[in-house]
Image (cartoon, rainbow over all chains, first blue to last red; front, top):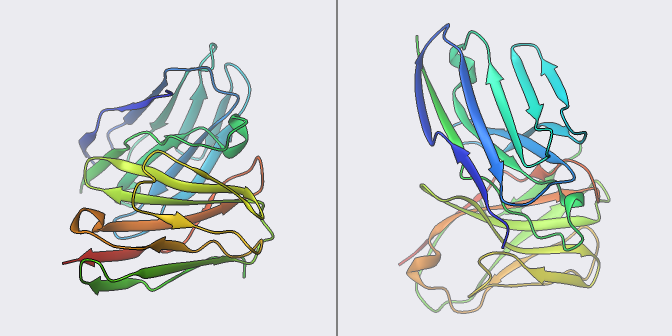
Length: 113
Length: 111
C-alpha cells in the first residue's frame, strides 16, 4: 500500500537557523497538505500543493511540491521559538478515490532560544 | 464559529467497558475521519466517511466501529476496549478536496 515517509523525525536548531523537512510518497499524489501541531495541540492546516513543481511561501515558510509529485518539502528560514511543533505531510482527502489517508510520521522541531 | 467538537476530552476507563467518543462538525463537510496518535507513530487513520451512510476502514480499524447517520456526527465506538487502545484520538472533517479541520483531541486511558 501507499507509504509516506518524512525525514528527519526530530530536529533541534538554534533560533535563527534554517530548518527543512522532507516528505516522500511511494505513489504519485494529486495533491499534498502540510499541517503543524504545537505541543499539546491538534494539527492545524498550513497549505495544500497541487501542481507539479509548485512553490508556495507563507512568510518564513516555503513549501515545494516535486516535479514527479511524489515528494514535498517545507523550509523555514530563520527559525523562531514560535515554530516549535511537529510538522506533518499528508495526501489531501481528494487525492485518492478511496478517502483513505496516510500521514507522514511527522518531524518534530525544537528551537533553542 | 467553525469547529469540530470531540467529547470527552479525557477518559480513564477499564478493559471491556464499552465507550463512545462523539465528534460533531458544524461546517457541512462531507468527509470525516478518526485518527489515533501514538509517540513515534504519527497520525494513523482508523476509519473515515466520505458522506452520510458511507464509512470505510483506514489503516488501523481493528477494535473500533463508527457510524455516520447524519452529516455532522461521526462517533467512534470501542465495543470492548483494551489497554492497547490507550492513545490520543483526533476527529477531523473536510470538504471533499479541502483541508482537514481537527478537533481538540480525546485522551483515552484504558486500564
